[in-house]
Every structure is written in C-alpha cells, then in structure tokens.
Image 1 (cartoon, rainbow, N blue to C red):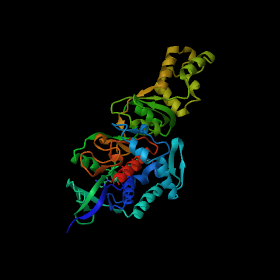
Image 2: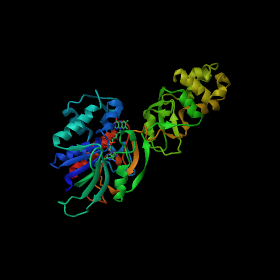
Image 3: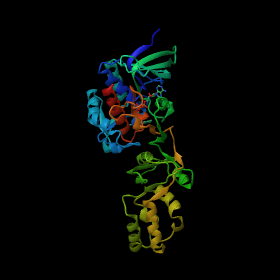
Image 4: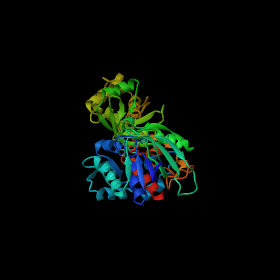
Length: 408
Ligand code: FDA
C-alpha cells in the first residue's frame, strides 16, 4: 500500500503548528498536523493562568532573546498584534488589557484554542493526535512534484505506517513542562539535517536559593514587593514574589530570560525612595528613632522584621543617633542593590519557556525555511527565540507560523 501523501505535514499541534496549519491550508494546500499528545494546544489551555495572554499590543524585537536579535524582525513586521487582534475579534472572543499591553481572554484560554481549531476545520486541515513520529527520511529531489519527506509514524492505538509530504514543518515547541507534551524531538530533527542547537535552558522561571538568603525568602512566602531586578544585560521594574521555593513574580521571571547559571542578580528593594537621604535626614530630625520605625512606611511588617534580622541585626535596637553615617549609607546601598546568587531555577517542570533551540543562523528569518534542507521549516519556540513575559511568546508563534505559511 502506498503512503498517504499531504502537501504539508506539521509536527506539533500547539500554538504555532495550528496557526501555520490553517494559514497554509488557506492557499489550497492539503495539511496534516501530527501530535503525540492526546489533546491539541495543551499549553494554550494552561497559559495566562487559564486566560491566555494571547498577544501584547506592543511587540518588537527588543522583547526577544536569542543569538541573533534581528532574526525575528521580518516575521514580526508581516504578522502584527493588530492582525491577531482582528482574528480574535472576528471570532467574538471577549478580552481585556492588563498592564503593559498584555491582552487576556475574559473567559478562558479555551477561546483561543477553539479559534485555532475552528480555523483549521474551516480550512480543511487534518489533525491526528496520539501519533508518534519514529523516523523522518528526506528524498532531496529537485523535482517539486515528488514527495520530499517520508515520515514513519506510530499511532497509539493503530498500526505503524508511513506518510509523505513535500513540505515538513517542525512546530514541536520547547522542553518546558514535559507533562504537557514537551519533548526535545524538534531538536533531534534539526540535528538530523545538520542544524546547530543553541544550548537550552528553562526560562521565564522562578529562582531558587540554598543559603541563608533562601531561608529568609521562604519565611516571607506570599509577600509581593515592587522592585527593580537587574543584571549586566537587563533590568526590570516589576513586582517580585517571595515563595516557599525562592523568588518569583514578573520581575524574576523576566530576568531569568537573561540569567546564566552561577551569576548574581541585583535587586533594588526600595526603588520608590532614596533610602540614603531618608536615613540621614531621619537621624538629624528624629535621632531617637530606630531603623525599623523609619522604614515602616515602606515595607509590610513581616518583611521589615525579616530584613531587620538579615540586614541590620547589629543595629536592631540602636537609636539612629548612635549609628554611624557610613553604616546608614551602606545599609541604603544594600537595600537599593541587594546582591544575591540564585542556586538555580525551578527548571523545566514549571518554566513557561525554553531559552535556546534551533540556531537562527541556518534558518531564513523571512520564510522559516532551513538553509540546509530545502522544504524543511521550523516555527515557534523550537527556534532560538525566547519572548518576554506578557504575550510575546504567542506573538512569535503566530508571526513565525504566518511567515512559514506564506512561503510554502
Ligand atoms: P507548543 O508547546 O505550543 O506546541 C508544541 C506541540 O508539539 C505540543 O502540542 C506537543 O505535544 C507537540 N510535540 C512535542 N514533541 C512532539 C513529538 N515528539 N511528536 C509529536 N508532537 C510533539 N506565552 C504567552 O505568550 N502568553 C502566555 O500567557 C503564556 N502562558 C504560558 C503558561 C505556561 C504554563 C506555559 C508552559 C507557557 C506559557 N506561554 C505563554 C508560552 C507559550 O505557551 C509557548 O511559547 C507557545 O505555546 C509555543 O508555541 P509552539 O507552537 O512553539 O509550542
């Protein structure tokens, strides 16, 4: 029996795969989407705390991390936030804006998945779930009427068989959250065709600590604080959350995109005040005050007690008049630039994304086609493109899927 043929096979029924599927089918191509998971779009359903932060109104290349910062520009300019918002409106999905241009569904992430599945159905896309790909063979023919790829597949409850296609799109995402179907399969396919993989690491992920800093952080679990978190490469003025495992919240997740193992990070715990002036002025005006009283307006009581034990235990009960100016200046510097070294991160188990992936230098930023293997494409998170928190990773899924579909 000859193998069933499709113009295009897309591996991965996630955000980028489903989006690319219907955009490709709109050109009259036969499209099959394969996924080893039992459900399409599992990450979409989990995203945005169940409300899917499906786009940001202000997407630019500066919101992405990768070896080549220019790689995303072409695709992002051809499928914009406005384009996706128009699609959302066409489907009557109710949404709202949170801070910083983040658009979320009013009701449920299901609305975005249903939008994609409806578009796929209307465009005649076939989707086969519970299907593993066991091998990929390339024919490498110049004759475009011949199938270029043969895929050996194994359905969970069926017989192993082969499929052929002219165009193969790898949309398998990253390694984050293996229980949602994540696998390194896309990287294997890339390597099979000679692509380099930029080392991968969990990103948009909370930091963990093992030293006494970690003990203090744990004791403050549940408290959120507006901070400026930075390292040599990036700086974010956002809330930080103390948790039982370490430091989380938007400030930490964003900074994790720029963090390398072993590096320290610097946190301004009181960006809204000039602590040096505050303490030196208080020393002059109210010399009998304790540090905790001067800082009481700025930190919740529990936080203040923990900071007192951690940062100025020796001067806990000392009146300001009896604390040297240089000690107050040094304390101000510590609160404005608290240097801590994370032991690591919570890893792929909870990370929203994977940093690194298929190196962009061997993939066309215009078409997403491999420069090493004709008719092979990579889209979405499998590439070395990592967006900030705030709808940017979906923005990339849509834009890269669109660019690919236009060129197939
Ligand atoms: P995606 O992961 O969506 O899809 C990959 C598909 O490939 C999956 O269906 C998987 O089963 C399949 N697959 C993997 N290996 C396979 C194999 N060997 N064979 C067959 N199929 C295989 N982003 C954002 O912009 N806004 C947000 O609100 C959030 N929220 C969020 C929450 C959580 C908890 C997570 C984990 C992630 C987010 N993200 C996000 C990130 C966003 O979900 C992510 O970047 C996109 O889904 C990436 O789209 P892709 O299509 O590249 O991969």
